[in-house]
Image (cartoon, rainbow, N blue to C red; front, top):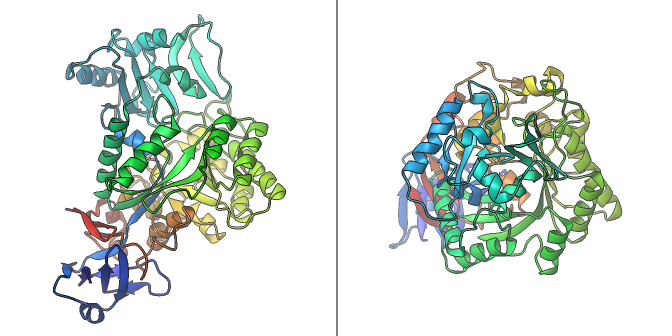
Amino acid sequence: MDMILHNGRVVTMDSSQPEAEAVAIQGNKIMKVGSRDEILQLKKDHTEMIDLGGKLLVPGFHDSHMHLLNYSLSLHQVDLRGVTSMGEFIQKGIDFLSSREETGGFWLQGRGWNQDFFSEKTFPTRHDLDKITTEYPIVFARACGHVIVVNSKALAIAGVTKATSQLEGGHFDLDSEGEPLGIFRENALQLICRHIPDPSLEEIKSMIIEGGRLALAQGITSVQSDDFEALPEKDFMKIIKAYESLRDNGMLPIRVYEQCLLPTIEKLQLFMSSGYQTGHGDDFFKLGPLKLLCDGSLGARTAYLRDPYTDDPTTCGIPVYTQQALDQLVLTAHQGGMQLAIHCIGDGIMYMAFESIEKALNIQPKDNHRHGIIHCQITDETLLDKFAEFDVIAHIQPIFIDYDLHIVEQRIGKDRAQTSYNWRTMVNLGVTVACGSDCPVEPFDVLPGIYAAVTRKDLQGYPPQGWLPEERLSVSQALYGFTMGAAYASFSEDIKGSISPGKLADMVVLSQDIFTIDPNAIKTTEVVMTILDGKIVYSA
């Protein structure tokens, strides 16, 4: 036996053996799970003995939706999270620029601003960014990634003027004289982003390694990541090549199930004609579902609603696709043997997505399709029932509660809010819930996500009784979402997601027993050790 973990509490997430005291590992597989005495009998001279010191051992965490490459990019950009005024926003850019020596072709990029945290409560414009620099182009993304703001230099490079046509499924804002303000929403982002220089293949690989290693430190051993459109060239072949090169050379630090963002029928057909589809790959890098980005975010008021926003009755948000276009993409993928993962935040776009899924299933019935809706925030009773009716996976991000509980009733009104973020209802309906973070929209730290799912509070503990407390998940249900639920969403529940004999030896040791401590303390629980493929890859 290569490794034995003992003297701890093992919560397996395996219903046939929910708890144990020790685990034996041979190679990269779990060989036996049981009592301390029976596992210690398997010890050999070469066995590495890991004394858990009474701590909790659970399956490796699995983030069901995030953006690994975007996260790694953000580590080298201006960090605009938590900025509370336009002055601070501008100064952040000035300070970052002054600390660097740049040459031709440089774009000053940043991410994380949120106008709701500004004292001014307004979006920045090109006039604000021009105070940072007019020498270099600037592009600063809102926290959600669905809105960017740029300076005059970036507008000039992109050639965007008052004569530029608006794009379907997107919008750029104009001032009273019809001049671009530098604010771009949804599909309109491509007017700017396609002009930013692409990193090299080696730079992409370095970023994947950097982000993956940081995820391991949070106990994350698997991610479902949306990367194909993270870079300006939007070259999915380049992304696949980077991942496969890392995997083939034993350098990929984390297991990746790629959520394949292919926004046009032409790209989807090219992808499929190249021999790619869901399931292509191995246990370290595998191509997963067709990812479709169908609307925006609630915070930016670009999530597409059936009825207007309560705090801005002039808009229902932005649907990225028409029903006909969405039907075509969904049916093509479904008939081509691809799973689906559809970004839907507003109820309006979710009705459209379910209509497309229903049409595809009527044309070609298929059991075990494991199609999913990502985010599924603004729902009503009919939509919640549709998840169960069509056996659609709900990819939820519990940490969204930290911000959204403060704006949701303002954005959509109390009545619509009552049936939104209804996670317990989904579980009670028999819907498979897979949990994630949407990092870098939010940090990928799993314990604050479990805390948010279990308490329905923000990270400051508000409100004391939780928002819609009847929709809280139990600790077991939340952990299931970050382990077995996410594994199921990637067709990998037979090899990971629980501490079971024969499965991959991916596990995490926690500093506190999240099942027995005060739920409010879950968010401060730390990762003590991460084991991936039978090896210790992180130790605090």
